[in-house]
Image 1 (spheres, rainbow, N blue to C red):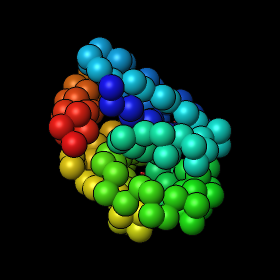
Image 2 (cartoon, rainbow, N blue to C red):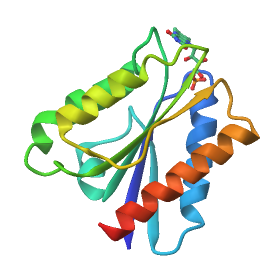
Image 3 (cartoon, rainbow, N blue to C red):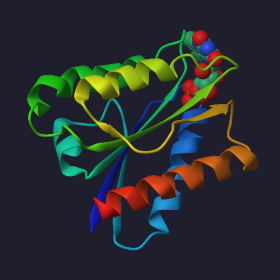
Length: 148
Ligand SMILES: Cc1cc2nc3c(=O)[nH]c(=O)nc-3n(C[C@H](O)[C@H](O)[C@H](O)COP(=O)(O)O)c2cc1C
């Protein structure tokens, strides 16, 4: 059984809608346990628990959500030596920019997470096309995690 954690933050609901799509895509897979947590409630234990991490954020002033940054701040030192190489996939909802993806990628590099699948950027609330892209990416990510 492979365990995947989805950590995200939402203000207006767009990122939560995407997180729910990602969760559903994973729940349809065999031998996969999914835990979906808002960043403010996610803990070090969640991060250590998972075999693969999915991070979702809106773009706020070209940066990730503060709550997500706080999650990474809280878990960075205590997770040293325990999470390096852990597969990580990121998705971002935005209003037409999307520059915040680079902040997620930079943090993933600091944690030394493994990037197996390109991030998915979604403008606004995910429509059918965006949902399809996200489901494909999430399933690809889960397949890598299953094989790791
Ligand atoms: C305070 C604030 C700042 C934002 N800054 C940006 C930005 O710099 N670039 C961008 O593309 N969208 C920006 N947006 C739009 C959001 O990224 C977009 O609406 C996103 O889908 C919000 O996700 P949410 O509905 O999960 O909160 C901003 C929205 C807010 C509320």
